Length: 188
Image 1 (cartoon, rainbow, N blue to C red):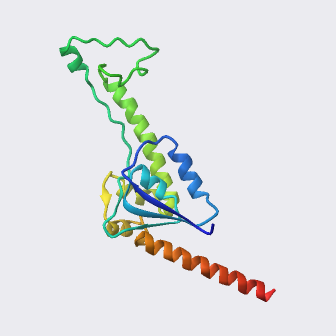
Image 2 (cartoon, helix red, strand yellow):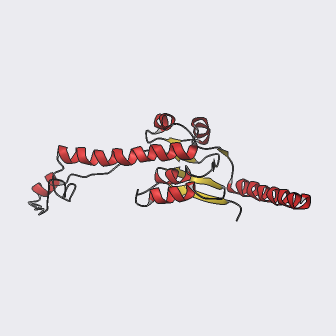
Image 3 (cartoon, rainbow, N blue to C red):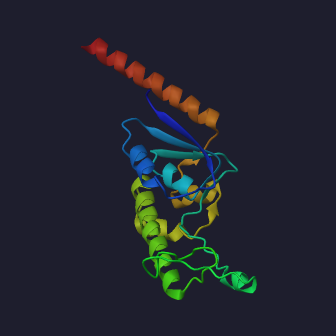
């Protein structure tokens, strides 16, 4: 194995295990190329950003840098239906967001603390992987998706190519390394 090509098409997902996957890709001892085929958004972009290069097709989208927790306060609906949730727990925050309970301002602020914690990590990881400043990442980290042209301009990807073109380039690079290695052996 001379290089690794990651085929990425995802709208994102959970933060669970994301840091570990990103760190493994970042620490790989082989060149890693992320090839976007469709979309690399949010958690998928987090992972792709740790590759040595990111290539995308001409109509693919990347970005959606940001974090969120979706909460739904069904307490009014429960009350109207005559249902009273009774959480028995160990503190104000333990049942925060539980179905049918009111989500208080304090609980919302606490969820915001978690969203900000993960967002800070997201910014730092993208900056590390892309070799750009955290402030440059902050400029594009508003949750939007970017076209390939916009993504190249902002440093989020390296170029536009199909998977076939990326794989062909990797084969050529491998042949070049093999030729260089043979030349070096001949000189010895």
